[in-house]
Image 1: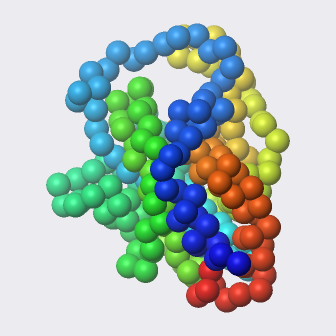
Image 2: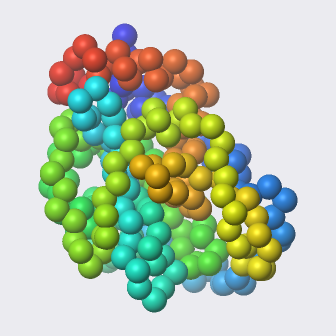
Length: 226
């Protein structure tokens, strides 16, 4: 049987579902709206989906931002941030930001692939999602200036949730039903939800039995062999 890590690597090979997966986490019939930013001046950024074993599960850490004056105040997101001159790639950006925000050693994080880039109109950011695997459970020491709380979500629980929605105000002032993932009673929505949705959809499409394969690997092998 192919290992879980190999399944992930193969699933992340192009083609990827991209916008079709992202659209599932957008509200139905939302009015057209744009912040009218100049995309040519958009800021490149990167985030990391860090998968790691915990008992018989595979978890993903999310961070809740502190409350501050800014676009991302209080939001739940993946660790990451804007690209800096010191970064040689989007992968390097994701690792650096994860080290800074979660306070973990990223030297042993293995690159598995990347997902489709997402443009965030409100902040004029281009987000380049990276996917990595760590063969052990990390000890998080988050930076309190960057992170109010670290949330850990089981990837299979995210993948098997029914479609959840909650009412929020669209930028036009109209209430819309926004899809979200539930992580410990907190909402993961927006660009972060789109990224997770694409990961789940590409796994479902290319390896329909991936959840069974994950449980088989986690339940009968050591973390080193995942």
